[in-house]
Length: 177
Length: 275
Image (cartoon, rainbow over all chains, first blue to last red; front, side, top):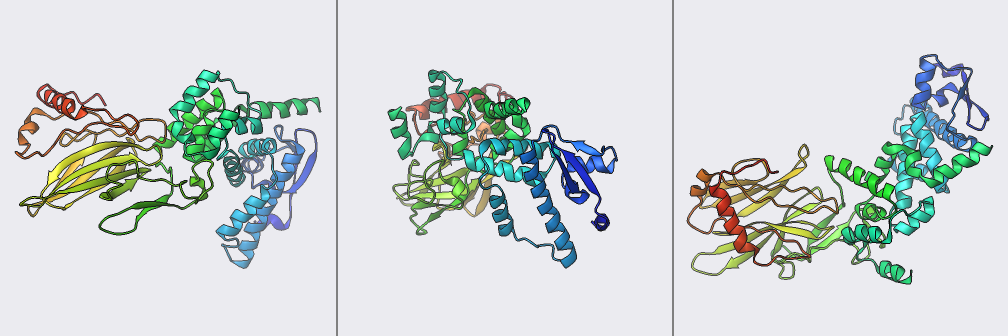
């Protein structure tokens, strides 16, 4: 962080051709980019082929925030700049309003760029979206095609009957279908 | 631009492929148990991925629920469950709602309030049910149950009569082998005895408890005693045969046949590799 006074800029190009210019410190939050930059094998513009511009914007927002935390904590000598709770709240806010397809893209991006914190946030968000849902709701959410035959589905459902029991809605729904 | 649209549709169509196995595993292994097993019904791919994630999860310490059972009194206990997190919402019911938590009401002795929780580990609960036998010397008929409150599966691990109420038990998880050991501490005539019920020691019972994070069954491997050990069994009814039972389908008459099988196995040269 000491060399950030110079503010070297890095250019990133999204899959749809948009070029983003960010500070090197911001780009380095992504481990993949960090490796590239440190080994000096980065071109003038780094192509990030699997990430679209709106997603990359979001990713860069995240990275900027991470840089902000770490730099402010190093200057004020306060390593616990953000408490656990604040971090959670921030993460929730960051992921607010993200729909399932955006979330998938975010996960792919953070996996590819190797940003652990963002990946964690994404996975948690995904878990909160799936949890408590019924198979049909999940299918609707992710547009998954049900390739089970009714018998097969019934079998799996029976095997795990305990997961469906104690459920006031389950019977209602399955009978209404 | 054309590509973009195709890409977008692909994401929606098979998120599993798009996200990669690693991310999917992470997602599924973080899902609370009930939701995870529900999600198995979504599609074949989901079913496979979740099975894989569950397998992976079994190698780590399992956390199927976080909460605690608490009793209202000390002598006769009615066990209630308090959940710590909204993740234990039972998959869909509202958290902290009455009836959405876990209960031990499927175990014998719960209603009579003679049930004690001895130990819990990795989602399994070891309970004991003590029934005092009135007579000249106070004796206690003690039965240990191992149960999974989530799936309501339970087995009888051990049943014996001990002089008085001086025993306790511990449940230990072996993360390398994914098996459990149960250690019984018995104070019999001022002498502390320990017995280990587990899968690999040659003394004690052989129990292999493949813990079920859900769908799999608790299994109890038939005990194999080396012939020499058999003589050591004391005159009193020390080791009544234990039998395997599940809450849904109690097997009648298992007690007797279980005993016969056990004795037969004791005289034959036992093979311990069937685990």
